[in-house]
Image 1: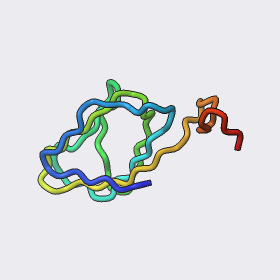
Image 2 (image 1 turned 180 degrees about the horizontal axis):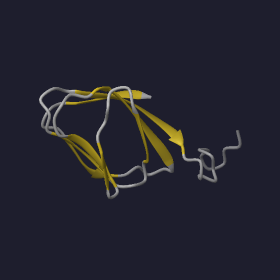
Image 3 (image 1 turned 45 degrees about the vertical axis):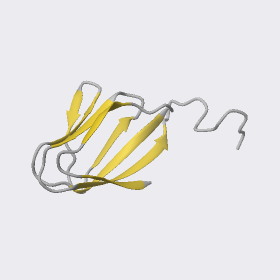
Length: 93
């Protein structure tokens, strides 16, 4: 888990994760303004105290056109459809 801060005017270029995992975002401080994330063909906006869960292997990007910094807590979880269940090659436990 970690905390993510984005300043006004910030951008994250389109990208995707390289492992089957779910990304969980909890909105901590989400100011007014155009602050959104696109995941695949969907666009979402964080809300304070609410969770967004998405498949990290989908292309996603972030735009922050607000006036104050945005803070979220980020957590990654093994994807429930991952046959390796989050284990690396050769791992058994």
